[in-house]
Amino acid sequence: MRHFALIGYSLTHSQSERLFYEQHFPDADYRLASMPSLKGLRQWVKQESISGFNVTIPYKQEVIPYLDALSPEAETINAVNCVVLENGKLIGHNTDAPAFQQTLVSAHWPLADNAFILGTGGAAQAVAYALRQLGIHYTMVSRNPDVHPGSISYSDATFQSSHFTLIINATPVGMYPNIDQTPFCLSSFSYPCPYLFVYDLIYNPSPTRLLREAAALHAQTKNGLEMLRLQAQLSWRLWHLN
Image (cartoon, rainbow, N blue to C red; front, side, top):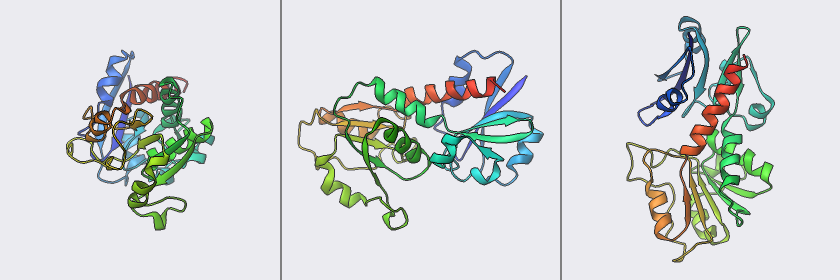
C-alpha cells in the first residue's frame, strides 16, 4: 500500500480526499494532514511512509526550503503543490499551472486578453505563469502592493476594472466556512457585462459570493473544481512514475 496526503492548514474545505478515491487508484490511500506548521515535515514523511503529497494554503511557497529539489516549472513559479519522493529525496512540482491553463483554454473565452489576478501567493503565481504561457497580459492585485513589486492595490483595481475582461480569484477569501466574504467588489462594472469572465479557484462553496455577483451581471463564471480534478490527475501521474 502506497500512502499519499494533502498538507495545509486548515483543510475543512478540502474535497481532495474524495476526489482521490473517486479515481479508484489500486493499492493506495490518501489522507488529509492538517499542519499548524511545517516543522517536522520530513520526519512525518518518513514515519508515515509517505510516497508523495499535495500542498495547499498556506504552504505552497513556504514548503520549498523543506524540499531537496524543484522541477523547472516549480522553480520558475516559486510555488509547489505536489511533492514526489524520489530515491529518498523530496522533489517539488507544480500541477496547478497546467491545470489552470487547460481549464481556461477549454472555456473558449475569446476576450481573455487582459486579466486581474487577485492575490500574490502560490496559487496566484501558478496562474500568472499559465497566463504568460498563453500570452495574456495580467496585473496582480495585492493587499500589500508595497511588498509585491508590480502589483496594485484593490482600490486601484476597482478604478481600472473596466479595462479588464478576465478576473481570477487566487485568494482563499470566500472559501468555506467564510462564505459571505468576497475578495473583490464588482460594483464598478455596468450591468450587463457579458464580456467579463470571472474565474474563482475556490470550489467550496459553489458558487462563491464572487461568482454569484458576477452571474448577476451576466458575466461568464467558473469555479475551481475542474482545476482541482485536473491537478490531482497530474499529481497522480507524477507519483505513478516514481
